[in-house]
Image (cartoon, rainbow, N blue to C red):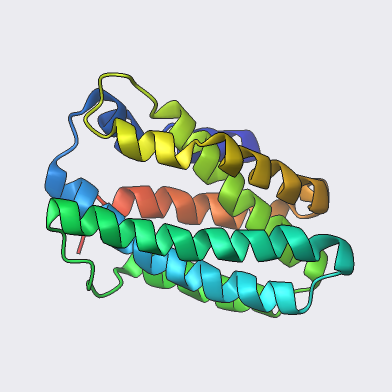
Length: 188
């Protein structure tokens, strides 16, 4: 079951369309605006996780918080270049992810750090599958597959316990699939 969810979350049609350059700009912009909302929510979750982290996890989580702030700045820059209105109300998939992050705030540290690793791991794997030298979205894909991001994901993996948290892994993967689905033209 988990293998199927990993595949669906990392080889989604949205990613195929990005790789092929066939995604409608409006769909990509919708997804980008919603991802910025999600990143702001993730920053809040991660900052709270940092506040209760074991000493050995603090530097990784602090660096991740700084990177998320930089990511929000990058979103603003991309929005300005492409004239994207980033002040969008969260769509249902974004709100559902927000609710999951709020619930994970109440989980023990091993569960929460594993959840954070899954969120970042699926993102890295997903964008890796979207890589293409000919895609008009190549700059975005390269940004989200940067070696520094990959190293951060590995550092999170070293703190996580995925085998002990299959249920939360499945939940996150399901939310990721819904998030990709949300970018379709009939999202609302």
